[in-house]
Length: 421
Ligand code: AMP
Ligand code: GLY
Image: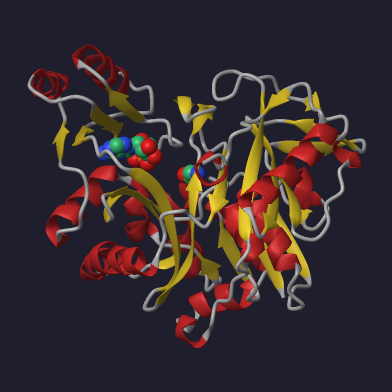
């Protein structure tokens, strides 16, 4: 089989590595991929906004299956477009992708189907939002409605911070803003919960905890994710049932009533408050770096899962997992998530070897003349699986010492809640 993966991050490299393990795979294509995927797939540099060019490449090269990694092409309707040409594609359609593309869409769905989430209001005028903030309790959460790579969320401690957030969002910091969301601050512990869907059936696809803040102790600015561990320390069967019955099933019902089905990965971002799950956000894809953390635990052939999802046969498959614990540390360019330099050589990368239960997934890297260079904020992901989180993290530290990349940094406390108790 020929399979194509859309995206260029650590998530897509992890998906590629996992696909490569299947004896059903003949060729892999990555659109556009990174230095890591270039050694196991053909990297194809195409304008991903140009659906027609992408479709032509897929048809000309007889690619049997497309996996869409990131949210942007999903929200833009790539799945709907490719399916018109009878291309098999794993990922949700445009209607369902609004779960991530529009926070207000999701909040309205929550209201209609009684899904537990923070109380909220939407505002389309600066003055109205500020008037509301005059009379609110703090902290309070202020969010841009559109896609903002995890950065359009402010937790404001007082009115002054709140006003600043409203001004920044309406002044276009995250793109054109016609409205904003102001919501109650939920005080609990976060958890990421994953499911995989075929439009009719769905199955659990692991849990994780990611560390979104740039500094140790979960402080500083929000990032795309500095590291993660799986499973989450909060997950148990009772909580899993509550999440499925109170949050996921009513969401699918809501989508069905809009005439849509959900196919692909669904990432449910939750706040667990005194054992009760509240929906914070949906993402219509796997998380990054949660994907890199979870996929090494998967024992079932991932090609079978993707195909079953495209053929509405997920109920015929049993998804099996390793019981080991998995941890991922992300290495970033100095300066991230603000300004960072690009095209910096990662000198020792070719000296790093990984064996059984240890993985190195590339993100913002390219290879030129047999040398590796960083081209993104998040550059590399080191993952290790072990019976204990402590050992997994210690295994990664050994590799990082060897890498000794002076232009990058990482958080040394990933997994502190399950390790440094
Ligand atoms: P989001 O992009 O909606 O996931 O928000 C980014 C981060 O902001 C989340 O991962 C939480 O840490 C935090 N956050 C979002 N909404 C709330 C809320 N209502 N209460 C507390 N924290 C929140
Ligand atoms: N790790 C957070 C995300 O993928 O959105």
